[in-house]
Length: 187
Image (cartoon, rainbow, N blue to C red; front, top):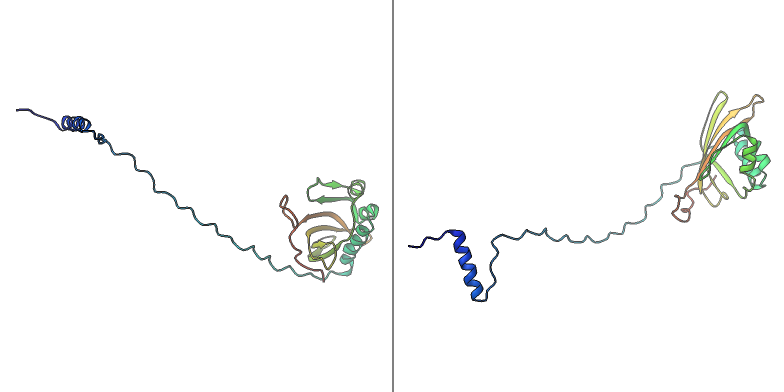
């Protein structure tokens, strides 16, 4: 009597199959491939609608003077007049540039600056001899906002409000092409 074991039988069947021209059957199962992942269709989302513009606020005359003097000096391309709107140790912190401090540095920073400018206030506050104006700017009242600013203010001994720091930046994201459509008009 011939005794066969299961592995021996598998080898025997494989040899017989080869002799008959059949391919041997694998003894191990091939790894199961993960199911193919279906590509999701591209969904084109609509461009988000910009938030409604923040409304302008009316400033007291002594603070409004700061904005109007700034507009006039900017339009005249008068770096000296712009620098004199600041405290002696005031700062200019423009987008994409290092900060500058003091009248001489401000005058140099604004030496080639200027043109049409319309400023509007979004908020303000004063307490004693310090205050601020948060606002928006554009080229003209009709063009709407293309940027925003914060003016830190200090009241001098003569009672005049001066700019201690001016920080501004564009509404356009850096490196992303043209500025978005203006968001509001100054009233």
